[in-house]
Structures are given as C-alpha cells and as structure tokens.
Amino acid sequence: MLLQAARAADYSIGSKLLQHFVLDQNMLEVDCPCVTPEVVLKASGHVDKFTDLMVKDEKTGTCYRADHLLKYFCSEKLQKDLSITTKEATELKRILAVLDDLSAEELGAKLKEYDITAPDTKNPLSDPYPFNLMFQTSIGPSGLSPGFMRPETAQGIFVNFNDLYYYNGNKLPFAAQIGQAFRNEVGGRNTVLSDAIHRKIPFVSDLPTIIFGADVTHPQPGEDSGPSIAAVINY
Image (tube, rainbow, N blue to C red):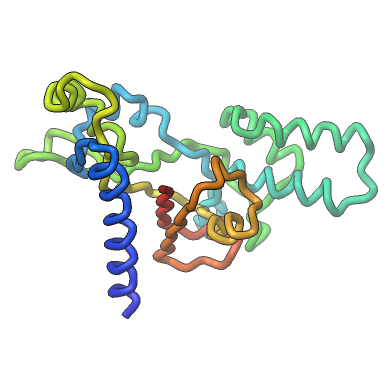
C-alpha cells in the first residue's frame, strides 16, 4: 500500500512537472544516466569537495555530523544557559555564523574546547574527517573505470550542452532535467516537511509548492546518527 501511494504521488508530481516545463514552456525533457563517470564529477569538484565532516564515537563507531554537534551545543548553550557571559555568548554566535567555513582542524579544536562527546553514549569522539556523500561504483567489465551514482541531476545537462543547444535550434532556455539523484548522507534530521509546513524555512515565492519527502530509515525527528534519504520537489 505504501509503495503504491508513493508511486501514485511520484506519477502525479511528474505529470505536473511535464505539463508545466515541457508542454507549456516548450522545453526539451532531459533524463540522463544515473551513473556518472568519475572524470565528470572530478571536473565539477564533487570527487574532492562533495563531503561532510564526520566524527565517530570512539567506542561504538557511530558516526555524527561534526558541524551538527557543534551547532546543537552552541544553540542549546545560548538558549538555556543563563549563566554565560556576554563575551561567551558573542563567541558562540560567531561560531554559528562561520560554522560552514570551519576546517576539519578548526572544527575538531572547538569540539575539544567545549568537551563535546557522543550524544547517545557520552563517549569521546574521533577527530573530524571528510566523508564523501557519493555512492561509488565501477563502469565496464574490467572494473577499472570508476564512476558514481550522480549526487545531482545537473551534470547531464552540462556534459550534453552542445548537443541539446543544437537540438533546440540554438535557443535558450532549452531543457527541463528530470530523474533521481543519490546521496549517502548521515543526519538528515527528518524535519524538512515539518519546518516547511510551519514556515520555519524561507520560501522563494508564494507560488503553489509541493514538498514530497521520503525517509527510508524513519529516524526520530532531530536524529543525527542514522542515515536518511529524502526528496524535495518544488514546482
């Protein structure tokens, strides 16, 4: 029943996207292969930089997003600790503002400075290390040509740009990309749909929006340690 409902929702959303972009806007419908050669994603920077900084519980091996742990600590401290000084509060706010720009070394130093441990066990954590979010595979019978399940759908349009541009009579815009993307993420937080409903995240417009999410592991809201897969479709 759940699978049938998911397929029905997928068909309904897909048909509306097809009607708007392909039929009404007269664009080409582009559905490229899900497996992408390494050379393409190397050129786009995904092989080297499409990563999250992770830490491990040194005893259980459970993985956590390092930036999530630091963000949670700073936020909780600001909201609930009435004894912190103005100087301490200013530093915590500064950390939250630059959190995405911290290197592995800087992030690790802050985790140690605030004595942040694994949230479930209170065990010590490893140093942060980069974890690539792509699923790797091999292409061809020899297994010597590496590839990845595409983490984004845009690369298909980029590598086929000249052909697509020609097919569309050398006019822009010309393509509506469809298909799936795959990411090996930890800590999706399972809150996107709830946050969107209550308008806790910014909306780019007031146009009708469909948000369709699926979490294959069903972690509890706010859970950071379990893997999750989610899809958001906006039209």
